[in-house]
Length: 394
Image 1 (cartoon, rainbow, N blue to C red):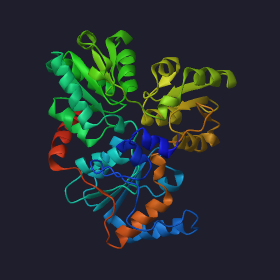
Image 2 (image 1 turned 90 degrees about the horizontal axis):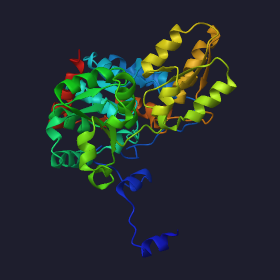
Image 3 (image 1 turned 60 degrees about the horizontal axis):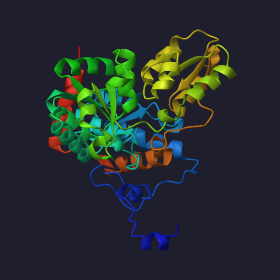
Image 4 (image 1 turned 90 degrees about the vertical axis):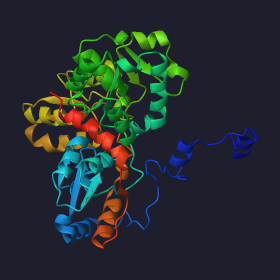
């Protein structure tokens, strides 16, 4: 359809479409697509030396966090690596660092800002590094969902549990309504706690982690779970369906882990006899059910560390990490392959590249604060409450 035809139909692009096209910014989440300054060229052969020089000049004033899904060119400059929550806690444990440079995505930097002191400044090298899953649940949508639950007469029975991969707004909603945060490592403990507080759980924003934990770990049935679609009236559910459900799953997912299919599992077993299939719990339920092992990013790393020499593994998680693990354990004769035939990086995570990191470090070294991520005080207070409930889980 041409632009003229679109105008004739009076079709207006949505705010999200404009954001993705680079024609608008999102002031609520601070994400945009431009840097207030020129990035060095990606072909600059001196980028590594420039990053090292700027980091050395900053010394203990800077602490660089690198998520497992980052590119190798970025990871080499990380002071610590890990998943999102581990990195946020690592940042909080370094109160002497004035600048926390988070090589990850937006919600991770928000969590670091929530957990660090007011004197510390959290920086995201590219403000356009978001998370498609986190963006699938907005504060307005979740507030509307709570109204639906209230009208159905069940809100008082519902305890919200939000995955770490959510915005500060959603974490704050969770804290305000008596809920907790979870990671892919402690989701089972979080759900057990939640069902001690109430009869039902609203699980945000990843339906697959919620479903897999409820069915695989807590022994529920698929019929105990319903999916709330924020784009449909009443979430696409009847009042009776909401009242009968134990798990109300938000219709969100990870764009990377959602790509893996049962066909992927069957194909790799046919191609590599004796292969161990190890997947992240953000994968679809049928993929998790067909896998040999299921666990968080940290679980995946530890499983491969403990694996015997000569073993074969197909890993269902982000490609940067899989490739790094394959290279790391090649000397131990461990064969590690990506579960799917199609190459699949986390596109938003990969926005943090070496030019953005160099620009960030050099700006800070010159005394210019760029791309600060700052959560407002009220949101921070309720979000921290939800995070503290997680930290107190038995």
